[in-house]
Length: 402
Image (cartoon, rainbow, N blue to C red; front, side):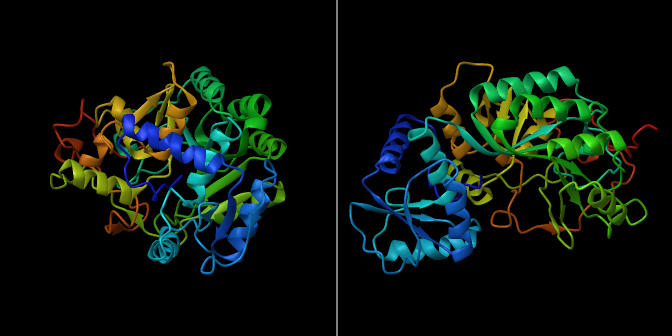
């Protein structure tokens, strides 16, 4: 979830009270609910909601809706610029954000908890391996710095069990590396997730960089479990290694769904660990955090990290693990704790990792770089911030064995 509509993210008694207040507003069935946004987005919202709700929504334009105590508006636009265009129009006419006007993802998260008593998360990523066939300098998962390891299958199963013991539904569960296709127990992990949690997942996806051919056995499992393959198109960066056309042809022949991503795109240069950003005050860090509005949550060793890059930096030993930055499912936690985490609340109102990161969205970070530029062989000690890393992490060229 990219939550760019909640202005304060500091978790305290006031925030807890506001959470319940918002939940009560959304749970009030006497209120009329209008949708604002494009016709296609309204239709998609209605179709999705009809699967679990009989609530009636009023479609159409938002400019002629009269503000009163019995009406709320849900903006179904998911892009930040489109959302704020509608937000400004409604604000000028007296509508109040998160009182009678809501971002779609926020409204839906509250609806599930305060009406259905369920926790529904938008997206969870699980890293299975840090082995990769590429060695991208600006990798958001810091692969050049990661100790090379396949995480034990039993650990991943244990994480999945813990996650779904406290979360009712995950819309998108993405399995990643490194390079996802090189994880040796991928077939077994997919099968385990499908057999045990297919009713609690909307989609299971595998991330691949398009350099590795999936085996026939893996293809059979993906087809049987309706897995979707996310392929990053790095043709321009590594044309000698990219097998995009061949892999998409194989997937088509096996009737496996796939999405090709990042064709012609740029990456964001997160800065860390090569560049130390200028110090920010707490209020500046909160603004930076809100602009970033990171949507990728990682689940690792029983902990839900709000930011995937933060989690990867911890895994690599580049940055200290801080309880402010994640929610520990090994502890006793409530459904409201999980909702607050999904919405982006933290004790500080931002992540400690925000102090060293330039940001994961163009709203927060204008520094664009070419995708998948490969890391030259060099010592990592010259580019890691010494006050943040906990061990030597040489930046070397990595090749998957075999």
